[in-house]
Image (cartoon, rainbow, N blue to C red; front, side, top):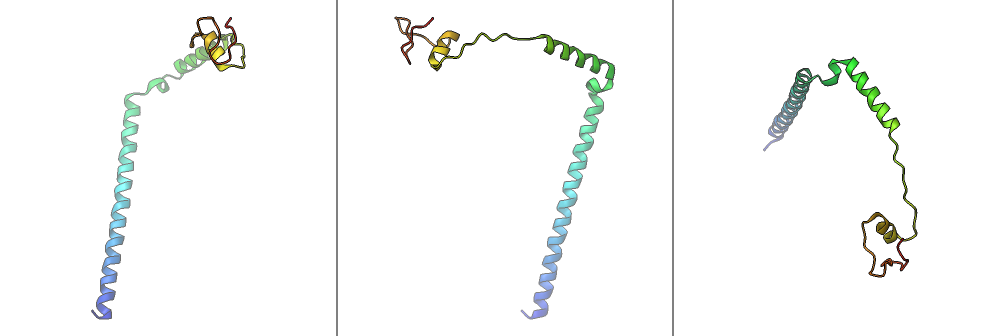
Length: 108
């Protein structure tokens, strides 16, 4: 193969790779635009609360009022032994003499 044929082969290969790259970029752009069009179509079909701002505001205020009025008192006392804490919550069992299997403390 002489040098002219090598250059011609190199130019053809470079052109093919460039053409393939342009094709791939175009394909990605088309898929992305198609997905966005599909998402916009779904938004128009199912507008949800965005179609009624007054109702959205009412729901927002209702949720804020419910969460601010709800408080949960915690009667959990800290113990050194995790097993004692689990026994108090009812998630673990004591020995037959009501003692903790881990530390030996008598359960309350």
